[in-house]
Length: 100
Image 1 (cartoon, one colour):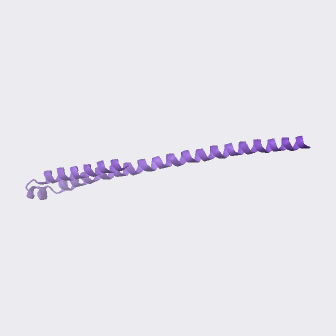
Image 2 (cartoon, rainbow, N blue to C red):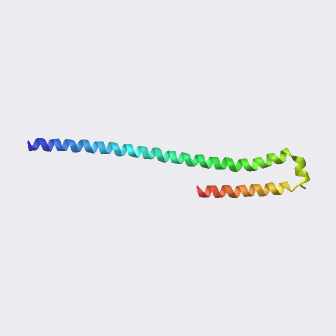
Image 3 (cartoon, one colour):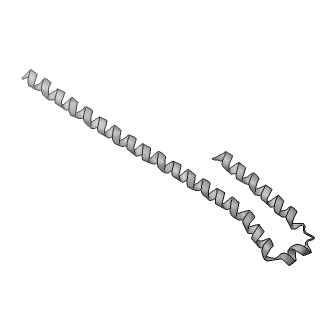
């Protein structure tokens, strides 16, 4: 009787170990998925920031091209303003990338 109980206890321990190993493997798999999703989210945010940084100077150039008379009346100072705008956006882009 004691041997039967010992054998039963060993079987219970064996199944418990296998269930724990399966649960740990499943949790690790879920952790890996969460890490990958986090990385993809980060990359998406970074790409969005890059796109925004590119659109702003391009939008300014588009506005200048669409209204050449207004630019000429400004004594061609639009070139300096455009350079300043681009420099400002580049500084902002650098700061965004350093923060990520």
